[in-house]
Length: 340
Image (cartoon, rainbow, N blue to C red; front, side, top):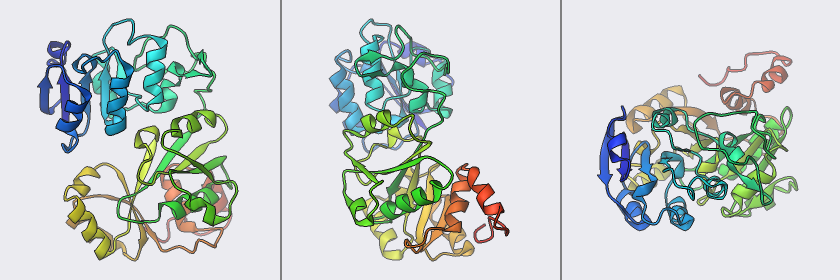
């Protein structure tokens, strides 16, 4: 279900055909919004920007972006000159806030069709040069906008994040890179950690969460795919998709549930990957039933010294990396012969 925070546009948002589990009206500091919703589970938050106290001060929006998952927030802008200025819009994008609009009718569309960085790159100022002057935010994704970033370039930014402790995000990021680079231009980067150094691969990169947006911007046109080992601090909102890793051992699952009993509720609709798994198809079905979740893919223990893993081809094919199909068809056999 969705939530909404309204102020100036309360009457307009009251007529939007969207189901809300909670609605609040008024003017709130960022701290009050964070406190009220940090432990509240919701699908999307519709946030009337005028409900944020001193919202024209961009640092107030930054407070929210640091403490909330902004990929779940749809920001309804007002018509003020400051908020619609190129600088303000560029700063929103820099913070990983991609779902913003002045169009009430666009809100319902954005719930089911959230923007990625490519969709809002035209608002982003790079090297102090505005990519597209005097544009107004909308849901329209115009490929012919003038930009220093090639917005027709289909960059996929895939985050890999551990849900259970030490579920193998670093190794899996590395193995997926090796698998993809046979057919795609791919980069692997880890956030706020230095475990890649132990893999002895100088092409692996490192960055901080603070610099992650700049890293993506810098390399936007250089790669087809950027794989991000998110660790604990990496911004999910910067990714076009995220793989959530669970190692389905009893101890790790019990630790997860004791830490957060709503853990699987929060993963509804996400791409759950069982990693380092010894579960067969029947076990996976039992896992889904007991956790009330849907497993996207089941990966067994893999030998990270090998250059080729057919099971990872299966995962990548399911994610839409169709070029890998040619390589597998040349070798004969059925691609999906191991897992359902």
